Image 1 (cartoon, rainbow, N blue to C red):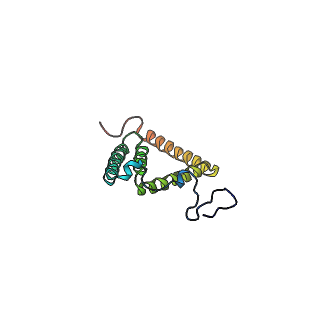
Image 2 (image 1 turned 60 degrees about the vertical axis):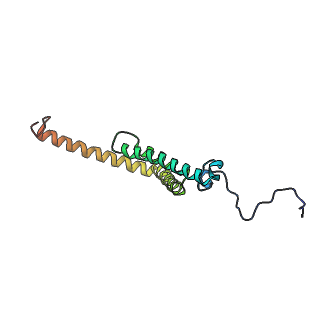
Image 3 (image 1 turned 135 degrees about the horizontal axis):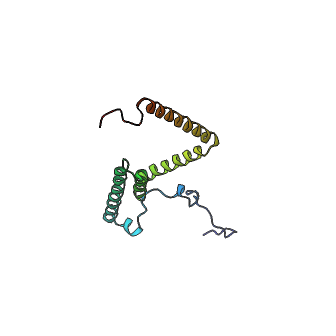
Length: 145
């Protein structure tokens, strides 16, 4: 066994070092090691995670037309799936990247100014339409109830 002059650890050529950031975490299952060792236990774990994620996503879909945080619940279900399935990890990372980009664009002063102008124009149009309606019909409804 050859010994080098220094006691510094030697980096493996095959594996590049990756920081412990979420973007560089390993793909795939995050199940405990004892579950991953047994094929039957791991498949049961995956089925359980899928069912729990499906229930959460289904609840989010139900909340979409109702008052409630529908999209937030759907993304929570995707996060549950992402603990076990690579496809969900890919979708969740893509969604997170797009939301971050949209937030950065929304904070741009030019975009904020444009949005404020569009909102003001929209409110003026709604006010004019309301004034025309009240001029034509008054406070009474045009149909007999």
